[in-house]
Amino acid sequence: MLDTQSIRAANHVRAATTRKKVPGRERGLAVGALGLIIAVAVTAASVTDTVVGVRLLDKADEHTRRSRGRGGTP
Image 1 (cartoon, helix red, strand yellow):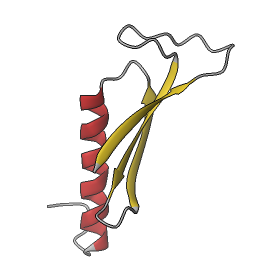
Image 2 (cartoon, rainbow, N blue to C red):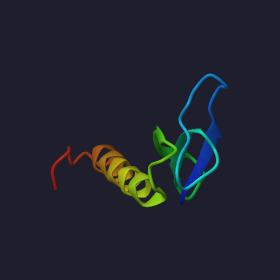
Image 3 (cartoon, rainbow, N blue to C red):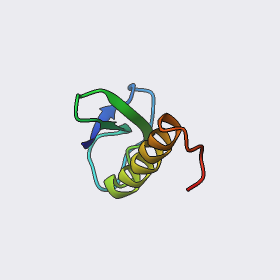
């Protein structure tokens, strides 16, 4: 499961976005069937959810390959 959440920045940070009214950062999580965190991505809030999702899937794939002992190459 993938999910993203916008996090408001401190008052002195000027990071307003064009698509959202929340200045700050966006975090994305990838969790497994048991609810354990597999991958985390933290980006600027202006980054689209699609880009965050692709990063999370890449990290989750890398984690799966490492845990199965196949290294980092397909």
